[in-house]
Image 1 (cartoon, helix red, strand yellow):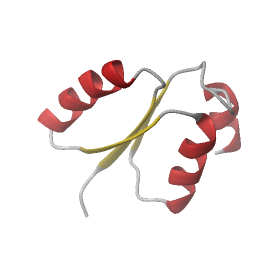
Image 2 (cartoon, rainbow, N blue to C red):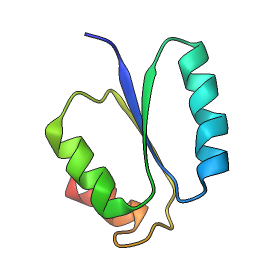
Image 3 (cartoon, rainbow, N blue to C red):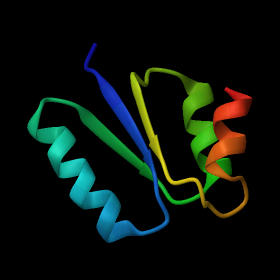
Image 4 (spheres, rainbow, N blue to C red):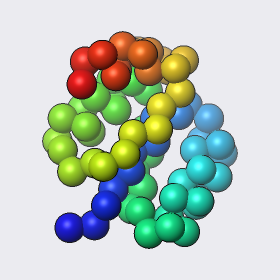
Length: 68
């Protein structure tokens, strides 16, 4: 099983820059732009790392972490 990271960041350019760094150390990276999508992805399981912006549409990063 490959180590996977989820990046929850509304700024696509920033998310991709961070994602490239994570991929360089061997992580598979998925991207979402809002908190509700992040919660859905995380509920499916398989992630070893979450990087989230605190300010997200639909569900804040802080609330996202609380719900985990």
